[in-house]
Length: 308
Image (cartoon, rainbow, N blue to C red; front, side):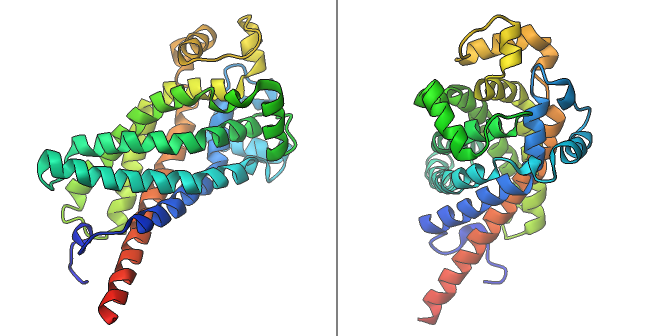
């Protein structure tokens, strides 16, 4: 095992290994930096309550903890954990399978950036189908003065008052954001790996650095779409009523118009600082945990096989 290229282990990692490693990585990614994600949701508010206006991520976290309680930044974390496990299991398994198949076709087994981008985009379709309802509930729980007492109460209220479609109201916007996000993310990650870990060995430092850079680049580039997604998920009442929108806002085009009406060009970049601060360590955690579990489980399987 020593000195053997990680990516070219005999027979590679199994589908089950990719799924298990992906599930653990997804849960870690979404939970470790969850308080910053809560801040990001609030900072993307187009017409925040005066008590929920923040200049920085640190100031926001401090203010939330002091005025609303120590556990407030973690509100909604349970529904995120429930969604993140299966969503990332499918996401990484699909990515690995498609990346290998497409790379074999496009570049005869080499590392194709086109294959990485396509594989990441297709994997996103599966991931978002599972995560979108969880995102809707999570973001409504994260908002200032959220009226929902619990995750279950939020699900029941949304279902009763807005119908099942409310859980997928932002799905097209989420895909429009996440497909380029994941394409940029995977291409940047694989490019960074080529530069700092060309032999594709198990190297935690390279996975952390590559993941952080990939997360930062992709997050900054897709912030305008994330702002629109947040508006569709939260249906921010004060903002919508100020531009005479009654009922529920739906559709990506309407969201784009509304954000521009309320905040101009700058409105599209609300919360960009929090988004990048959240995404850099989150993506670094996801890749380092995923690569570790993939390496560990594959190594364990090979050792078991050789001992028989």
